[in-house]
Image (tube, rainbow, N blue to C red):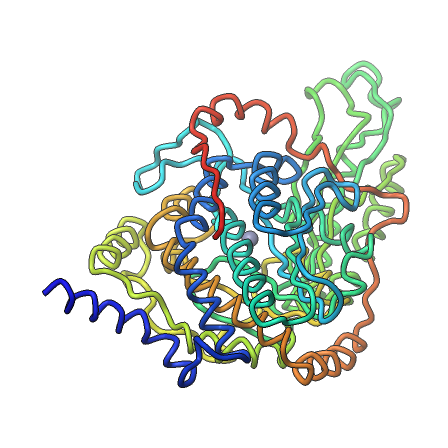
Length: 508
Ligand SMILES: [Zn+2]
C-alpha cells in the first residue's frame, strides 16, 4: 500500500516534465531546462512565499523599502547573485544579477506598499493590523518572492546546462508614486539589457502586447501672492488661492476640447490658512494622463498655459515642480508570443473548493460579481490597455519588454482598497506565485536560449519604439525624492516591527 501511494505521487509529479517533451528532465535544451526550473520552484515554494509573506508584514511605503530590500539582498546574495543596493541615487533601489555577458535578461518589478493599507490578512472585515498604518493592498509583496524564485531557478538551469548570459532583477522603489524608473533608466541600467519581463500580480495568468497602460505626468503648481488683512486692506493683497481656483476652472473649460482618452485629476494641497488672511501661497497638484505620452504631454502643455493665465489674472507669480512621470508600457508582441505557450504549459493553479468558496463569499461581501477564482488562462490579446500608470513604462521604451501577470488576487477585488490586503499571503496567493514563478522562469529560459527570439523582439522594438521616440520627462537637475513617505513610515514602523515574521529564506 505504502509503495503504491508513493508510486502514484511519483507519477503525478512527473506529469509536468512529460508534458514538455519525452525525457525532458534528463536531457539538454530549453524543455529540459524548464522541467528543471519547475522542480527547483516546487522544491523552494516555501522559501518563495516566506519572502512574500515577510514583505507583507514589512508593509513599506515607496522609497522606504529598507527592511524589504535588506531581506531580498541577503536572500539573493546567499543564492549566488551579485546584489547592488542604492543605485541611481536611491537607497532602496535594488539590482541583482547572475552570470555574465549576453543575452542579458532582466525581471523588472517593485515591492512598495500603500498608505492606509494595513489589514489583518484572511478576514474581509475591516481590521487593520496597525491602525492607520500602511500595507500591501495591491500585493506588491508577492513580487519579491516570485521574481527572486524565478531568477534562482533560471540560475540553476544556466549552471546545469552551461547556458551563457545574464539574468537580472530590478526592484524599483516607489512604483505607487511612479517615482523611480525614469531615474533608473537615466542612470543607464538598461543600456546593455537585451530584453525585460515586467512582473505584476493580477487575477489572471496573462501576458499582453501593444500599449498596456497610460502615460502620466504629475506636477505641483505653486502660486505666490501677497498677504494682507482680509477686511482692513484686501486691496493690498494678491490672493494665491484665487490663482489656484482659476487654474481649476480654466482646466474645466479645456475638458470639452480634449480627446476622450484623456484623464486629469488634481488635489489642492495649500488652500489658505483662515478666511481673514489673504493667502500668499496656493498649491495645486495635478496628474495628467492619456493613452500615449505625446497626447498626455499636449494636454500638460495646455495646463502650463492655464497656470500662466491664472497668474496673470491674479497678479501672482507661479512655478511648477516635477513630481513624477510614467510612459505607457509598450509591450513587445514577439516576447508575448514566447510567454503565452509557457502560460499554457504551466496552467492555472488548481484551487481547492475551500479557496473558491472563500473567494465567492469575499466577492459577495464586497458586492462584486460572485464568480469565484479564475480557472482558465487568458488567451493572447485578452489583456487590454488600462487607464492606470506604472513607471516601469519608461523601461519599455529603451528595451524590448514582455509583461506577465500571475493569478494571486481574488477577481473583482480592486487594488488600492484595504480589501486587497486580505489575500496577499493566503494559499490563493501562494499558488498563484508558484504559477507565476514557473511561467517567468520558463520565459527567461526561452529568451536566454533563443537568439531568434531576441532578434525578433529587437526588430519589432526598433519599429514600434521609433514611432514615438522616448524622451525622459525628468528635468536635468531633478533627483529622486528619497525622503518620500519617510515621516509616515517612521510613525508606524515601531508598531509594525512587532509583527515581522523574522524568516531567513534560503533557496536550495
Ligand atoms: Zn502595482
